[in-house]
Each structure stands twice: as structure tokens, then as C-alpha cells.
Image 1: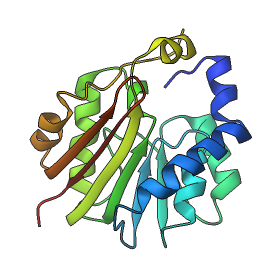
Image 2: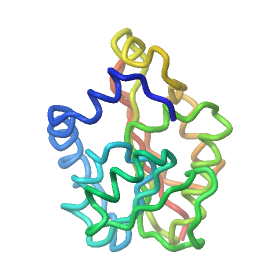
Image 3: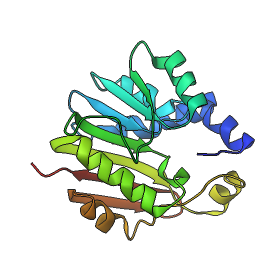
Length: 189
């Protein structure tokens, strides 16, 4: 979804990639992601780089054509890079052992489309598979970074019910006030 120039520069920077590596690598140790993982909306690929270090097989789904080309150039020899929408995934039901998405849900313009992504994540997961991720929360700095961007922050209070409605169980949501909401859920076995 649309990002302003400053936002694009930050998200494509080495400093952002280092920050993602510091935060994501230890967080991922909480989960058994299995053997075939899908990442939704990797953007410039900072999270993709981390995932490639911890999962045996990775597919990334990116809606933006320019980002898809960039991801193919950077990671196409180590990950399957697919252009498409998380709300209408071009994958078979039950294919993936885990589905992830990081710092992208706030770029989805409506709650209805976010819910469609949750439902599609449940559809493409194997029974017992994990859906996990995190996203930014509204604060002054976050708002400034997103001037002119699509910004639809996920409401942490309603997220558990939304994930359950999409078909998940064992839903866990943690809010770090004015910073991040983290979540995980499991497709019933």
C-alpha cells in the first residue's frame, strides 16, 4: 500500500534492517514455524532476511509490483516471491506450516480487508499451523511517519475476536503501549 518517501527510505535502510533483526530474531524463538512458511507483505525485505535465517522454506507474498521486483532480485534464489494480495492468496488450502506478517497490517486500508487477510491466513495454513506477527500502534511519531500513507492501525482490543472469527484458536495478543501489538494464533487441528 502507498508509503511516503521518508517512510520508504526508513524501511529500506540498513538501520531499519538491523532494528528488525534485533527485535524479530529473539521473538521468533517462541514459535515452531515448521518447514514451509509464508510471509505476507514483506515490503523491502528486512523481515524476509531474518526469516530466511530460521526457516527451511520461505514463500513471500507482496502486493506492490516494485517491491516484488526488489524482493526477487534480493532473495529470489532463496525464497519463492509471489506478487499478489493477502486478501486473495494464490495458494492451495493447507499448504503452509506457518504464516507471518510484520509491520504491514496498518497499510491495509480497511478492517474488512485485514479480516480477509486473517481468513486467508487460516485457509492456507495446515491444521495446527501458527499465524503470528506484529504491527505498529498509534503514537505521535508513528502518525508523522505515515503522513500521506495508508494507515489503518489494528485495534489490539478487538484483534483476538477478529482472529477467532477468522477460524483461529489459542489466540494471544500482547500490547506494548504506544509501540507494538504482537499476536499469535493456531489453526485448529
